[in-house]
Length: 477
Image (cartoon, rainbow, N blue to C red; front, side):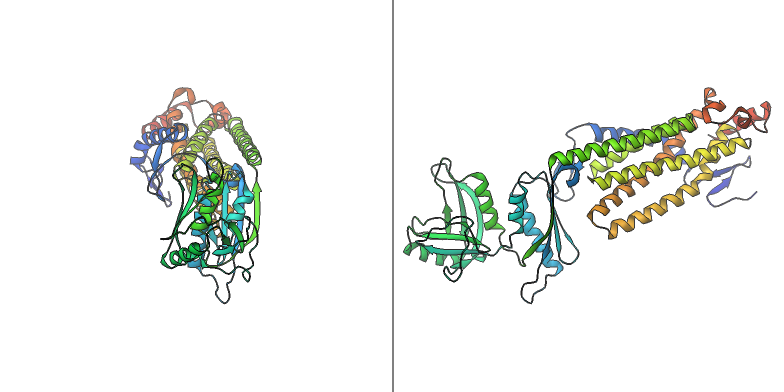
């Protein structure tokens, strides 16, 4: 008898795999399955659970995160352009990314994603945006912020300023902070503070130009052009607006955002933009869930019809697999996209593929005369190498996609990697543990429950020999 890698001989001469089924795992397997299953159910279905967030250090609520294509929103790709003879470096991209992220956060958009790609690209994904054009205007502004005296000429927001006619008093570099506040009457106002040089210049100008206009200009366009009511010493400036309540909240927020995060080190150009409505995103999600459900039901129907009792076990393992994988998605968290759902459905097929290999090996072992418990053990043992090789190959491919792919491809690859790892646990540990218990029951020892004929089920073994083999195998289970 030859002993292959990953097996060892028992006293009876049978081969027992030890690489993936150590004795301690055999005893701890049922408890491990139960504990992981209970934790997955809690994470999946109990609302309001919080866990520490590694990025912020604060607690966050466990929830299923949906990507832009499922939730709806805006995706814009920008390119950082050369400024004179200066070429943007990677550290410059990070500065631009940070400024854009601050601008987006100030608009109140929930869970924005701002990432850099390659040597000069910034991608902005804003789920659930109700006014995508306003966000695009805000994010795409290069950010040359200037404070420009207008004299007696009144300008409106959006008007273009001719630098030759209206020279700049000082740039946005003299601004130290900006915020929304309320005045003594309770009306909403915008306040900002200037640094020493800017404060001195602004005090001198306002002292000599009361009732004249002064503009805040971004990239040559007027953002706000208030009238000067009195001299402003110390660089503490307050901008108010007539009307009930003062400044409208939306306009005040946009003005403060421009003041705080106005200047970018390099100009940016919008290369592409995709807007997905919330309704369309919901439709994508419903269609994806329907397709996934149909796929799972068809796979489960095939397993039940063709493999019967082992198929029932495989269906339970498949449900267990889905619950555990969803819990991992919510804990990490993984942002689910259309590509991610495709990876999830693909991993379901791979999980069932492992069960098919095992069950076919079981049938072969029963046809050559082994008892049912011995056939189960031999089926898992002989299929292990094929399952391991297949899953390792998938993990290598998915890892390469994750390391070198775009954001969409990386989402697909991450879901596939997690799915392959969990599917190995469900196919090897969950399915095997349940089958071991089932085949030890007298009611389970019927040929029709395994899709084989009575002749194949007892082939080459008499009643006495069959009883002896079953008893011997049971003592080893």
